[in-house]
Amino acid sequence: MTPKEFEKQWISKKGNLNKISPSRLVNLGLSKPIIEFISISGLPNDAPPFLSFGSNTDDKYRGIHKLTKIYDFLEPGFDKYVVIGSCSDGDPIVINTLDNEKIEYLDHEDYFSPRFFNTSIISMAKSLLAYRDFVNNLLVENGEDAYLNCDFSDSQFEKLKHAIKKADNQTYANEGFWKIQLDMDLEMREDIQNRN
Image (cartoon, rainbow, N blue to C red; front, side, top):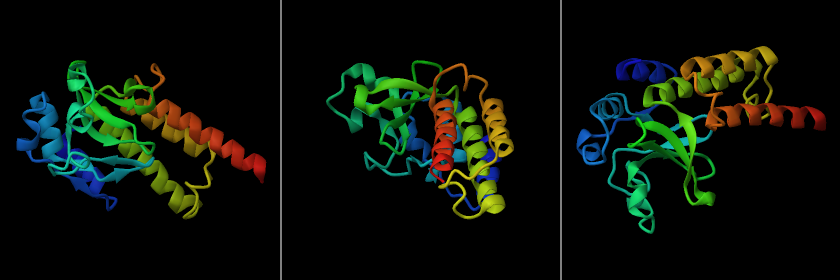
């Protein structure tokens, strides 16, 4: 998937993208392909499931920066992480510049220990599209509260699971973000069904 393909698919559903100026990215230890992707397509301001991403600003909490700029108490070894967003619980979503630019999230309650998110920025983009499309389809097919009420069928869920695996074949090899999210979606659906 090229940056332009991601941009076209994302904005086709009225999604917004924040393109980041290359000058903000060049001194972060990122490769040329990553810089091109983030500057050409941009990153969503927010995306299901309750994720947010950086914008084109110098603000240390809303822009894209090294983790050590945001949390200046961390040791220099944390310099390898470039924060591009955050999960709903505040865990930073990062690019690990020393591990093939793998996308990780860092457990801020466990001294920023890394957890798997995606193998690359491309697989992250594909995963975001897959989950966004799942949510949008639920709203159309099952009603406007369908996602919040975990009102999805097994076939709708299996379609999402297949799309997430196709986006990144390492999703289920690692106990990472997307596997945890999908497991949680199923658990929440079961809890709601048991209450009703």
